[in-house]
Length: 147
Image 1 (cartoon, helix red, strand yellow):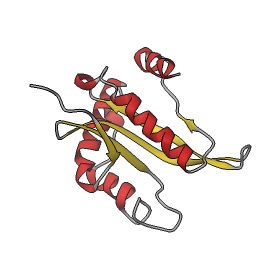
Image 2 (cartoon, helix red, strand yellow):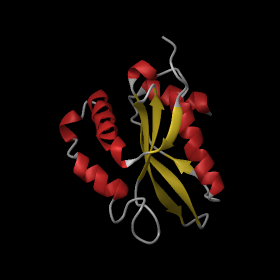
Image 3 (cartoon, helix red, strand yellow):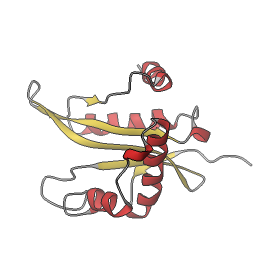
Image 4 (cartoon, one colour):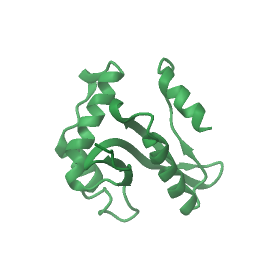
């Protein structure tokens, strides 16, 4: 069976269960699954409630992109708009980037990062930033390979 190409797009309300599932997978990988307190309702409210993408003036406080393959959500990028007093411009802070292990090495993570970078450029924002745990060698190597 041939795998369909990966599509990146903004998360929709019907994606929240899958997004939370991938957040839990990430937490398990980071040996912190006991620290995930978010529920589907919490993420739904954050992404799509009064302060989410469709809500209050000033736009969303948190947003998410999903990567979809064969009709399944296989990757996420959860992010929010940041601000630099030094540049006087906004940017994007990437909170979580995660691709399910079976879909890695297909360009899913790169596609999500490229979409975030394009959003920053389109908005005239000055940066895209994130942090990574110092022991997470595969993630560090991935980010280095992205330049």
